[in-house]
Every structure is written in structure tokens, then in C-alpha cells.
Amino acid sequence: MFRRILVLSLYFTASLASARDKTETWIQVSSPHFVVVTNSSEKQGRRVADQFKRMRSVFHAAFPKAQIDPGAPIVVLAAKDEKTFRDLEPEAYLAKGSLKLGGLFLRAQDKNYVLLRLDAEGEHPYAIVYHEYTHLLLSKSEDFMPLWMNEGLAEFYQNTEIHEKDASLGQPSRENILWLRQNRLLPLDVLFSVNRTSPYYHEENKGSIFYAQSWALTHYLEMTDFANKSHRMSDYLALVSQQVDPVTAGTRTFGDPKKLQQELESYIRQTSGFRYIKMETTTEVDDSAFKMQLLTGAQSDALRADFLAYNRRTADAEALLDHVLQGDPNNVSAHETKGFLEFQQRHFEEAKTWYAKAVQLDLQSYLAHYYFAAISMSHFEDASDQDQIENSLRQAIKLNPLFAPPFDRLAVFLAMRHENLDEARMMGLTAISLEPANVGYRVNMANVYMTMEKGESAVQVLRNAAKVAKTPEESRMVNAALMHAQEYVEAQARFAEHDRGIADEEKADDGDATVSMTSTAPRLTRQPEFVARGPHRFVEGVLKNVHCDNPALDLTVNSNGKLIALHVDSYLKISFSSLGFQPNKELNPCSDLENRPAKVEYVDSANPSVTAQLISVELHK
Image (cartoon, rainbow, N blue to C red; front, side, top):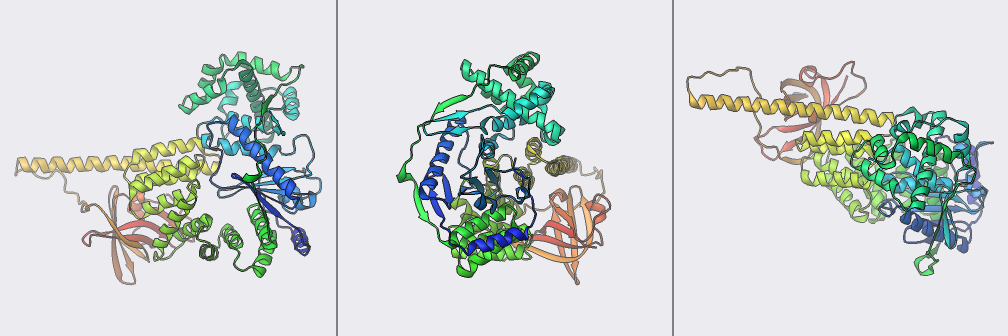
């Protein structure tokens, strides 16, 4: 699997600069679902476009229910030779003795790039392209598909060969067969239970047996299903999608796991040869569907610079972009890529400036709209541009309704303002449906539910998020959010019990005027329903008069003698952070905020008699 590594190389920066001095023709061939850019001939460009059109048809037949067209377009850079390919490939592969690639698939949140070497050699030079394309198609099933099946299918289809009239699917992997014949297989209940935190997925030796055995079992089941006209693989997937655990689903679908293990071991050691599937392809070259365009030097340089930026070859990307902007100061693509590079380096104001200019130059750029809005809402001191943020997010959604990030950001934006919460919920759910594997969207969805005071829904969303977390960092993020949501649910229950106690006391008072109050503890004044008015505001000062009536919290901010009263129905809704120091213990808002310097975010109420709403607290030293 392709992993991006950040290593700067002055040598290749220099080689790219000298290459620009030589005139080289790049052409673009656009089909309905792919854009092919090549420095080879138009004939070659059309052949590659046709190959990818066939690939899409093959995978559509293999996965008829999959959404095969991602929200971000797929751009294919077809390099005519080794030199062009090495000018663009990951730096990790440039060292002497490194593995020679024939192609790679670069997946990012907002881009899908394929880099191909047209003179590639080897039995399956584009295996990594087909492997990652399979993962792309399966991404909507990642929240329930067992890992062995996900990786097994990607390994199965990576050796696909597509010809003029047919395609070969599932050609055997000699490397996997050799590895399996030399090593002991995992018990199937272990294989079925491997998840993204398992050592069998991460450790090199254990990972090798996991990938190889996942391929072998997938190959065996696919071949027997094809021969017997059965559908055990899809039956198994249907069961796990209904939350049947993978081991139980395996027994119910495939039968006795010990017998299946024996069949798999015999299959791996067979001497008669491994079968594969040949399927006819009916896709023909349709010249009317392909549009050819000769690119200017600025256009081809800007596109390659963008690929290099996403490929983490930052210095090379910067050199090409500077060259482009010298000759074409209004190049929209170059402005977008400049913004992306600044964003990568956490230079948010600079990134915002580049994207704002890109929006001015091209109102139809959904990426420029999205990044401008996302950066603006995450890094602003005042909220004077909030209308522009919302407009840009809505414009990005309108321009590309299959692109998930602006749906997520709009959900967060509306929840932050406590406005149109039903729409915020729909936006969040749409983002998850478009990218089910994105854990961050699920955490944000949980926050929307808590803003709507639907704590149980937030907990359920986060429990599902835990199933799709891929890394230890994602798992920690989900677990922290889940703990927070569970505390919120408990606080809601306490608050409801508290309300019932007050109601009972008031009922008793109504029935008998002589009955005394059972509790004399002070309570915070209950607030009418809060309706936000105007932008979010920020103020720095010292926190004073902190009072809790779990989970509600009141405080005032003393800012140079000016007192600002703030309220929140549940302090679990507040986003807490620290600046310039790390707290030495877990924060207790009821006891640890008094007399602390801080920067707070709040929003005024539409009702002047209702206290402003506290949104976030950033503690200072």
C-alpha cells in the first residue's frame, strides 16, 4: 500500500527546474469519469482513457452495488517514460536500490490521482492501482466489512488484466502462494477477528501472513462461488452488515470453520494450477465521449505541481508553482495548490488568502470555496465573515454534491451557531453516507446530536465510529468523545431527575401550603430556550463567579473591568483547550475555572433578558 513520506530533495528540485527550460507537450484526454494527462501521443492518451473506462466497467460488474464514482475526480498522469515518472513519484522510491513502481494510486480527501508509467514492465505493473481502486470502491462498506475481506478483495483484484475484448480477474499471486506454503496459516476465527488495531495487521511478519491468507481465502471462495453459481461471499457480507460478528457469520455462511481451514490448506498446496475468471468486456473506444485538449506549459506545470504537493514533494511543487505564477498570475489551479501547501504547513492566514483569491478568479471551484470556508471557520478572531463562510460551504455543496467535506463543515458550522439543527443533522449524516470510513465526521455528528440534546444518539454514533477507527490516534479520539457523550447522557439523566424533584416539591406545595421545602440548596436560574443572535464573539479576561448546578454552569468574564455574564445548560457542551501549557490533571469545570485567565467564545441571545451562551474556553497561563 502506498504511504506518503516527507523528504525534501534539492537534487530533484534542480532537475525539475532544468526540465522546464525544454519545451514538452502535454495533452489532456477527458472521458466522463476520468481525466488523463500525458506527455505521450494523443493515441496513447486515448488508449489510457479507454483502459480506465474498461476498468470502471469491469469493477462495476464485480461490485454492482458500489458507488464507483468518487466525490473527488480521478486524474491519471500517464508518464511516457522512466524520467517523467521519477520526476513525479514519491521520494521514498528515488533512492538507489528502491523498488521500481509501474504505477500508484494517491488517495486524498479532496483528490484522487493515478500515476502511470507507460513503458512499465513486469507481470502486473499496475497492481497497486487496481488494489487501491478496489479499496476506493469498498470504502462505503468499511464500517461493517471485516478487514480480511476488505484486504482479500483488494489483493484478489490487484492482478486484474484488461484486454481489448476481455478481462482476467483473480490471477494467482505467486508471492502469496509461496509465503503461505512456507508458513503456518492463522486459525480462521483469528483471521475473521483481525481489526485495524491487531498486530496481524501492523507487524511486518504477521501482516504478511494476514494479507496472504486473506487473499487465499477470498480467491478460494470467489472461485468456488463462480464455479458453483453460489453467493457465499455476498451472503457473508449481508450478515456482518446486520451486525452479526464475523466469526459467527463465517460459521453460518461457510460451515464448520475447521473443515473450511482444511479445504483452504489443500487449496493452497494444490498442484493442478490456480484458476481465474475471464469476463468479456463490451466497452469500445468512443471518440465522441473523449475530449482532447492541448495543455499550455502553465496548465501542465500547475497540474504536476498539484500532484507533487499532494505527494509531499513540497520543494518541487513550490518551484513549479513559482514558475507558473510568474507567467500566469491568475492561474486558478496554482492559487489552489499554494493554498493547500500553506494549509499543510499550518500557515492558515496565508492559506485563506490564496483560496480567497482562487474563489475570486473562479466561482465554480468547489475546492476553493470549501477550503476558504473551512479555514475561515477554524481560525478567525471575529465572525464578521460568517455569512461568507456559510455561502461558500453551500456553494461547494451545490457545485459537487458527492464531495463530503463541506457537508461535514456545514453541520459543524450550524451546530456552532445553534441554528437550523435539523439541517445540521442532515448535513452530518450526508457526510457520513458519502465517506463512511471518516471517523472525524462521526465525532462531529455526535457533537451535533449533543447540541440537539440527543445524548443517546451521540453515544450510538460513536460506538459505530469505534468500529471503523483505523489508527491508535483515531481510536483514542473516538474513545475520548464516547466518554464525553456518556457523561453527557448521565448528566442529562441527573438533570431530568432534578427537574422531577422540583416538580414534585411544587406539587406538594400546591397541595399543602404548610409543607416546607425539602432542599434549601441554591439553584441556578432556569433559562428560557436559547436562540442565538449575531456572530460568535471572543473575549479575554479572568473567569469569575463560577457556579454549577450539574450540568448547567454560569460564570462571568472580567475583561479590563468589564463583566460579561455567560451561561450553558451543560458544561459538557463546552470545548475546553489550553494555550502554552499542559494541565496536570483532568479539568473539573465546577472547581477549576475560578480566577483562571482565559479566552472565551460566546454568542449573544436573541432575547435580551437571556444570558449569552458560552461556547468554548481556552485556558491561559
